[in-house]
Image (cartoon, rainbow, N blue to C red; front, side, top):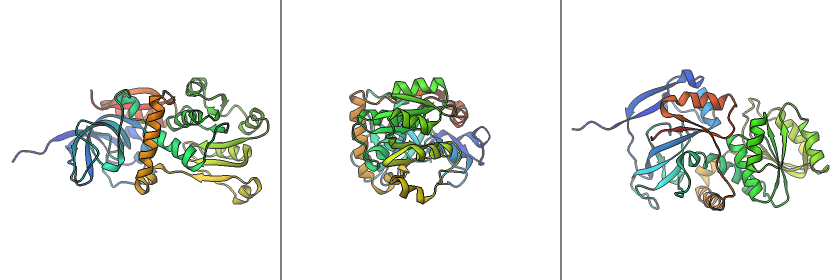
Length: 332
């Protein structure tokens, strides 16, 4: 009997900071079961969710040891029983815990084809971030042409996606960034105005820029003081989309404030759509690929790290120093 094939994979053996928690190991390669797809991984885009997973602070807590990595690009290597609409050799993007390895098995519903013009590194970050932006702005916040949209962390992965998706919808975007390099990245994504976190009075400047109107939509992956500032400059019947708390402090508020200003507070966890409404995920992917083909969105890559140095990518993202996606190249 021949031995089962093996692969290299980064595994979390103990919860903590990535440099301490991640170990590169040789493990058995997975095989696809019914309704799943085996992907030969090309590149993994590191998300803040990955950092939280490794620290044990994410909504989902896999049993140790586990392979992190929630988003990747690659090629279909094999199909499980009952999988239709995909073929071996298709270039795809996929979402699901366990991507930071040479091969990954993913539910077929979590796999989407990508065009040949979308390179592996850029493609690896186009699913979770851009889908989060699309669902938040279009599906939940009902964005329309001319809306004022305030985007916190506008140079981060999901923030930059939100800027591009909002601009493509005809909105006017105010981006908040932490330094000049990130400000340049947010401008390149299409932000019309840039505010500096920790330097500008965000609420006052938004009201000034909008002529007293305020932000029709706020896209907030930061939380803490960013959220408080948003509640002070949200427009009448505005919408605040809460997508994360990268600043380390979860968003909290008094419900009485909602009544005073008549605005909506919208929570958005994209993975729920992947589980509950996969047909909407496919619709969103089609819309986003159309925007890519038109040149309306361009996934930005801050840096590419080789597979053997994967913990460095986690540290870079966790430190908040990246302007764009930090990508781990798996296939050479």
